[in-house]
Image (cartoon, rainbow, N blue to C red; front, top):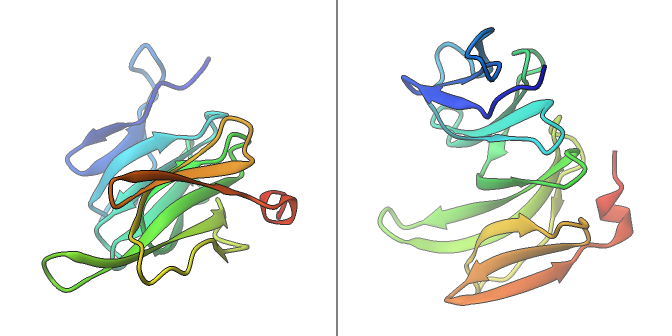
Length: 155
């Protein structure tokens, strides 16, 4: 039976069967989480986490293999469900003053910095359906980056 999309309840992330049965917590009991995103293959959930300095959490839908990735936000799953693209921002306490994009495997390995642009604030990355490009927003425009095969196929 397939899993339903993840749900947020009291800042905890749960998944359940479409009939509401088998509710399983995929976030840690002491974590305050938000924005759950089910992977394309429905095997994992990523989410924002207020703990760990504002990290991205990933777990299997059965609640095992929980991993806290480094600081970041607005993750997007790759079409093959093996990687995430996300943004890392810096702020002055009020306004975002810098941002760059990264790719990482769902287990936290193989982190690759995609951008290093001090004059451009990259936000809201998303994978193309074929996994060869990343689209993102920056200063009112939409950009795309071609992702080299060596980066796309890292395990």
